[in-house]
Length: 65
Picture (cartoon, helix red, strand yellow):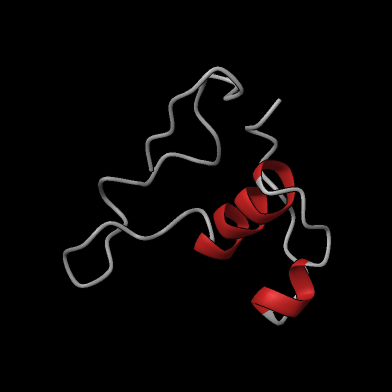
């Protein structure tokens, strides 16, 4: 995922995928997409109850300042 904007903390987040440890020829996911959603809901929209939206608690990535 690519994010841009004044409030985005630049850099790489999560672990890079392995080019040799593949899943049926495809790269394996290294970051749960629900963490990205939790980040946007909590840090961008300012809504703290991510449980209501995502049906679980997920750690944010800390990309929004």
